[in-house]
Image (cartoon, rainbow, N blue to C red):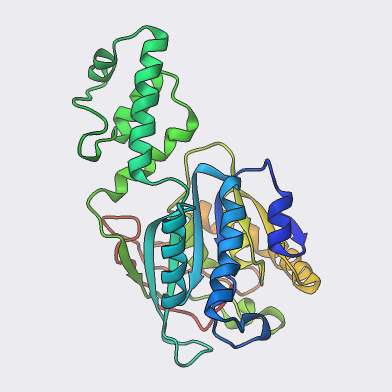
Length: 329
């Protein structure tokens, strides 16, 4: 895990040339609970606009971005991102909370943004495939029929299914950037508005080392593991390090993690917690102790995972969750 101490906007600008598969932002909410969170609406939008603009060129073509916030703030971010064509909303997830530091706030939003939208991917893939068939001297129609594909890729949102796509890769040299197609298949005909309200049985003392409020590692594992691309190497960028739980989850899932934190003390906290918790979560994941299997107690007595199975027709449709006492990071 690479921990960078400093202002995340300035560090983003210094990462030119790097590429990340996943990014996570859990910054200001306009909640006014702490000094750094006291922002006007204009300041709030500018804060995220600057960081998402700097983040976009650092994302892989299939890159995804998770942004946490309150409904009115996330609505502004979503509108700005779409209007400026910086990012596109793939999922609007509503987190129903029962315990929160802000008593007037029982709902939090998780925005899942992406660099490319499906319509663009259809056109780009169709164009590339047509040109590649001409380049290698093969008939486009015959190539598609050889793997059981009928019709035009661009008609009615038609993209190859997973079996078709994998067979096509054996016939033509499809660049890895189009592997995003494997992920799209789970979103056909599904709603873009989902909710979750599930219990994560991670102990409070483990979540709140040195009194820092934190979202549970299990929440991040739950969200991140459903967007993993089938690539050999994956990189994650966490813009607000906090307690390190998002970074711990990403590294446990196999990402090479870069985490940014402005407070030097929290940087040391992240290093300390990650050194003892990443392996714990890797063992849980490798032994199938999440979602429907008996949970394993962590060696330090904390961060144990829930034993509730995820069984949904879509990756994020109606995921049942219940919140923890942690409203931040």
